[in-house]
Length: 487
Ligand code: AMP
Ligand code: ZN
Image: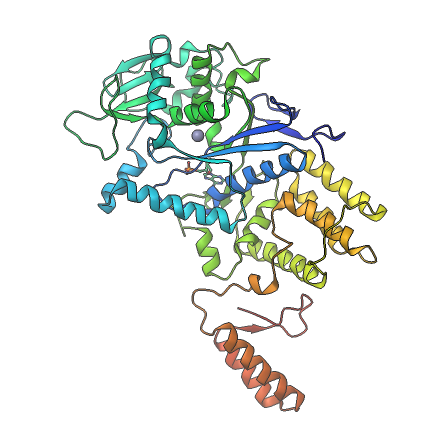
């Protein structure tokens, strides 16, 4: 595919609230910034939906022929327990609760996040930008906008949102009154929506992470970080900024205000680029019955928990792909089982093919229709659920040149990221943490059972089945997927 493709990529821009044709700012390139995790705790699977989405976007841009430059940040300082200005720094809080060094906390959870990234087959971005590496640049940024756009409060340097045009357009909060929900403890703020870009360490306190600045010892505000890192690494304006839907209301609205300030830009109506990026994209929430998934309520659903229960992590990726990224997605174990079954079916069909042959350009006439369907779906604001049905069609196609069929599957899977060219059925047989028997022990019992059945010794064969059942192994005689057993 090339960037001059007759079917261009259309993406929903949260800022203009419309579907827009993607046209790169820099010829042939796509520069994308994704708001990364705050590394004070493990990410839950809802958080990971945001990165499956950003990855799918990046893969779609590569598929359409653009050279992708993707940056994801790691927030290791500045994110308060409330997205507004209330509360404590999430990392400082966790470090003091655990009596641990804050840098160790950041390192531990950054690596845990990267493990999940790998497990979900999310491609490495060109750059992981770590917020604390950019503090000097943040201070310079703040210095450049301080005179015209900021004022000092008791607690730090604040951004006056009335100094930029169209504040809150992204959040649909047309006036400051609509942002009134965000009242916080800072009483000397000029407008309710004003936010700290530098927070002073309170008199007599010592934070584990603090830096000298013209406004006193302290730490940068969370919103400042993303403005600075995206500007430094991608330059304003860049193509696409992504994040979860909750970022639309505060975090991205504030980033945009800062970006307008540093660039000396006017309003946003008719000129989205003044916001610092051309397109702002947001994934909707993963929810559970209780509502938006969070780290503090109910069972803490981490990727590792899914694995511990015997699910392959790509079953979760499949579950995400089955929904549109702009729709809410409800998590349930049944949904996950269904997604896992779909993945198993694909992998089983792939195993029946010879994946060692060289994939060829899919030019066969029979492949045209599903390839076009796939392309149209991806170009339609990343409609992965339809794209998956096109993949299903190709995978189950018979009497077709194997190399071309494999070529078509490869093209599709490069976008969907299900790792179909490599996954085997054995990979999918994930051993739950509480499994009582090893694979070898199960296999040994199964061959004993086969032998007993061959000898028409049904009592023995039944006894083996019951024994396996007792140990949590369900035998699947006659299973259409050809899986002989599961845990
Ligand atoms: P955080 O580490 O809290 O900054 O969140 C990381 C990313 O996850 C952000 O892009 C959030 O918008 C996103 N996010 C948080 N909760 C959910 C959820 N339940 N479903 C989908 N995305 C979420
Ligand atoms: Zn951000």
